[in-house]
Image 1: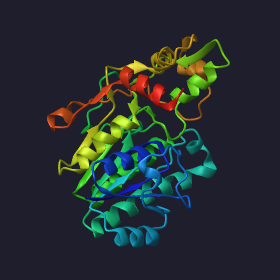
Image 2: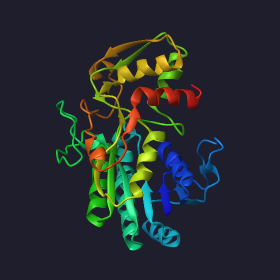
Image 3: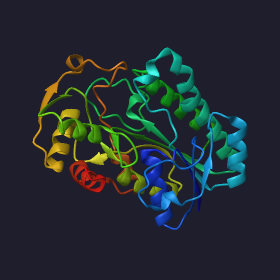
Image 4: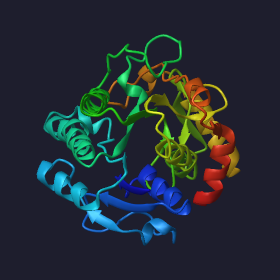
Length: 304
């Protein structure tokens, strides 16, 4: 199978390309930079074919995809700076990347009859209550600009294509970029105590584990909406920080505070990021490992 993976310089795209190459697929990675600029870890992604691609340029997208003629597109490219998305000067750019760019990728996928996998987020929901969100729920009321842009991207994919996977994820961490765990461990090197919110609940997602599932998916025709995070139950950000410090062997006290007490975010965050994942096993896919196991492996692999 020939696969095009957008956003290859990010956390998830990096791991998706490596996983697909391990399985013998032909893979092309793309991103906005002139050349691959992710972590130089010696993995296969650093030598895989790479094309520069601005997903907000329709002509460029159609030309690039028609030239590659992939069987599947894994669309990881996105604006992910949640707080910066709230700034007035960024809102049009966020829409261009997350909605319009996704629409162009979907249009190009249809033109070459490729299946498409679009990465979305728990932020498409209103974040209220305690019931885990089901993949086929329609309770949409995003709390922030980023969430609305990703929901708009979902709509573009489902409108243009029949052969699509929409996979919602949450609390992502991986080797190739910034993330919560990396930040917490760096802060813990200079602080004995840290304040972390304890009134937002969900489950983290390790990109290495997620990449295996995503390649499993595109090897099938089991299209539809899915939720995918690591297993092990629902936790708070404070719980995740404590586990990160435990895995890293660091003696740092985590003080749980409310979102209001923390008070640093421009964008509203959902209190309920619980994602129901049973559809994965019902569809024959293998769930991701326990989140504590994922954190331990990540801390070791990242050398934190």
